[in-house]
Length: 255
Image 1: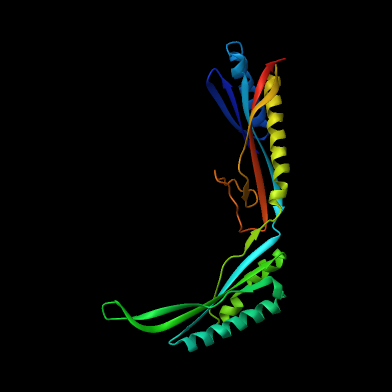
Image 2 (image 1 turned 90 degrees about the vertical axis):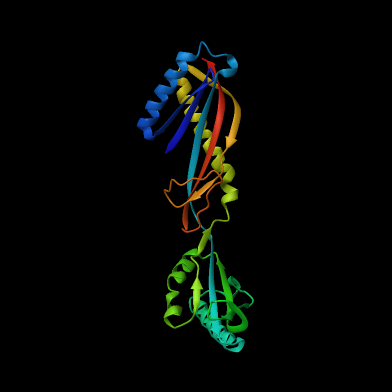
């Protein structure tokens, strides 16, 4: 796991990024040497160390949201409505056949779009040449694996001539807020362990925490390294990694 250690001495900062056990030993030695060399010149207020710790947890989504839009087109409203109605019935039968419960499905009202005729130069005229009517099914279920499977077989509707457009299911976890405190606690403990190691190598010890800065949670695909200053929330996969980061500025005291 990558991490960053920042040692603040005499207004200068030494920043080290390392990964794995070998990187930890190397970065600890360099950080300790840098700190030791400037310890005597540093005033008490400057004897601080800024360390970043992190924690990561693999979770599984518990809510799936999937949208299916049915379209009906026709030269007049009656024709468009008839096609749309047939499509709605086909989708309802498809969902029922795949054991989607009625209380897991919401169906929107009909949305109407007019297509105006155009003259030879492409300018829109007042006359209506055709209509498009759409209705959207929103499927929301806690059986995420079932929805993932059903979404993969929606081509059956297309093959039967039903005009449907589907979006990729979105997979979310309703319990992320509940685990946030534990994740930040683990990240804080990780930062203190790193600070302890560096201070010990320099012949010092850590004291009080001056400041603590919590980063935003990153919810990503498994093993992803994607991050964002505003936080990420990937909804494309059922399994996800949740990463928390905490930065501590800690006083370093002589042993």
